Length: 237
Image (tube, rainbow, N blue to C red):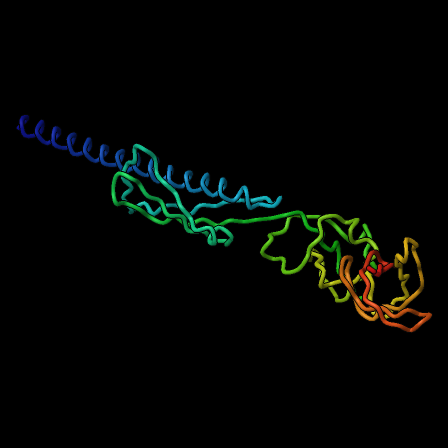
């Protein structure tokens, strides 16, 4: 009777030991190879995207590798690859492989790119003249921007909103005009080394750097000029 009990205890001890060993082995696999790949994917993407950042802040969130996937050891280190075109997307798929066998998998990551952008500090109505009081700067995801955005409040002071805009909206070039159609403006031109100025009327909306048509108030001739400020356009002769 004592022998049977002892045998049962030995068998239970062996079973418990094997169970713990298997669990430890699984944890080692998951905590080493899986985690190593996730960190490797993040490091690879950080390096690849650094040259393409253009001053943007980049945050990379790598999806967890499915624990059911068996990841073999790779003594010489895993290799990572993503197509260059894919790197510009918000969701990037990275091929992970190991040279010493035919094994590979695809790991997925979400890439969030943000940059400082001027936004509205409150609800703005059409015709509102922008000032430091109704603007702010915050980090915005670049994929939300479809037109030219601005990074400094000073760049927008004096411009006018063309549409109603809600609070926190990124201010983009299609929403405003530095010179608006019908505005009386100064036309500046250089002729023979001399700067000539005359008054005129804008026939189109424009932001700084745009070329618009304006009418010379004296001659009634229409010319094409570049928007230089909220009050002046320049004719390039």
